[in-house]
Length: 291
Image (cartoon, rainbow, N blue to C red; front, side, top):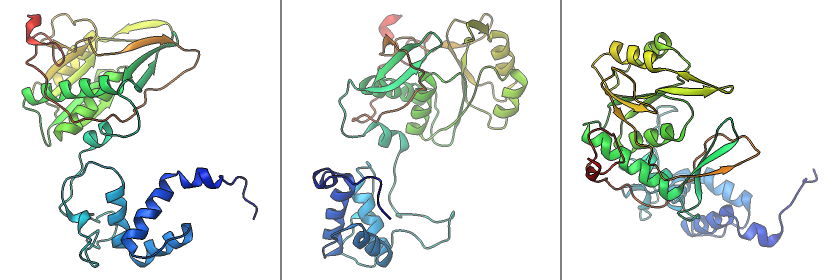
């Protein structure tokens, strides 16, 4: 079979797969001159292969099991059949940390590009995303939300949903969401099962050139959910609802765009840092001095 396309030698030499092949040859103790040699080694010595994959992945994992090259028989997994297989005993990875610690782009590179119906892009940089996630994670910590706790989001596909999701991952919390056009009954059917400790809710959303108010739906949902979750409102305040506001000061820039785009994530380099104490009227990003 004739290949449709073949990279030049220079392009092939600069790929991640070639770099991994060189590292794998060191781990294997013999040359792995082409893809098929690498493939054969992965089958013959799967534990060594997967340990090399983890080491070369760039993931900010914790634990040393993957680095034990002094034992040729160190298992990469426990041998149980999928999906019960447990990989790399003693190694942990935090999803948010891994996503925000990516390599190869600058802090001002776009991390999220969210486009509205007017073809306006809201762009959040890698640094801005890192800052937003850090502040949201600190707010979750202040509310006592951590490993195993649940958080719900009654919001559209907006950057704040991404930020809260990553903040939950950073804290080890469980995140669930649905669109604000669900209505109170449908949202309650989803969220009451997890009894969220915090509810992020949009007070309105745009669709087909119109803006739909969701204040009554949010108030109804918050009143019915078990455990009286803390309510954080995205948008205008909702009359009669005991809630705090999600601040609008997330670093972003706007531009006009002829295309349609869904929010996407680009990884950014840095650890998550806690924020300064927050204003009691706002949830995550306003410093105490605003009071």
